[in-house]
Image (cartoon, rainbow, N blue to C red; front, top):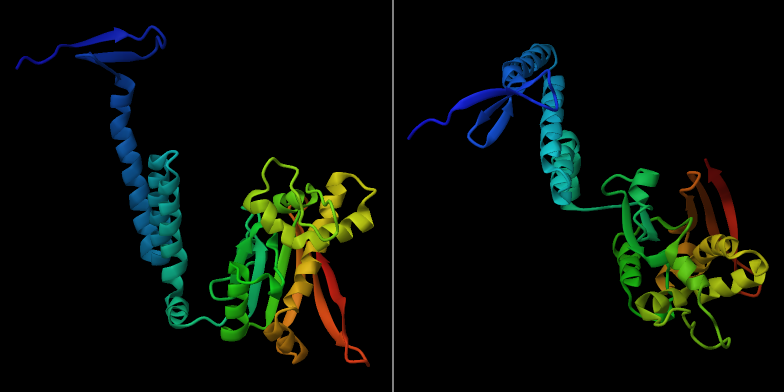
Length: 306
């Protein structure tokens, strides 16, 4: 087979460079000339890393791992799962393998101190915000971080609650609300025809979301009573915290939760994460027994972290 002729012509767009035309393919000669330099640069970096590795093997592994990750990340482009694969590889090398003993213990059993009930919102990750490590927090997330009352019947939240309290015997339950919650806005956007009627969505169809957030209609009612004269955004902000308090009260409707709270074995807390200015409010719901045998709730240990 005859070899395709190689012809060098000036590049009209870049006069200072030349292009080699091989068949129908054009290749900049500057790229060919730079190839040995690029290879030489890579070899030089590798040799420098090896010299460092003699003095500090851990630094060598970290440097080579970072280079490998960067190379693979650049090759993945917009591939979402390629990015997740790289993140997993980084986790395994830098965290899992560096803490093998801890993860071996977690493989046998878990003993978290916290149960966290948070919103499903992608901007509100309890482990990121509060720094929970694997094994520290048994977590369930749903729309608007709602805890339905015991009378509501089975749900994924009540099932997780039962397991955390009765099997794992957590010492703390933390319900975390947050700013600009879409679930709370859906709740506040509903209309109520009668006091004993379900909430009616202003949307064409109530759907799953409307039916779910209607569980927190008491928080909406108290918000309307306390902040009904304010703008809609302010009402939503008020309800975001009010719904947390109603969820804390709903926790006490579960017999085994109330029993452990009264026995001093379990504490229930509320939290509010404002991701607009990055602040976190925390409070505890105390259950006090009165002389007539009834109980009342009050908030204590309130704090703002900013």
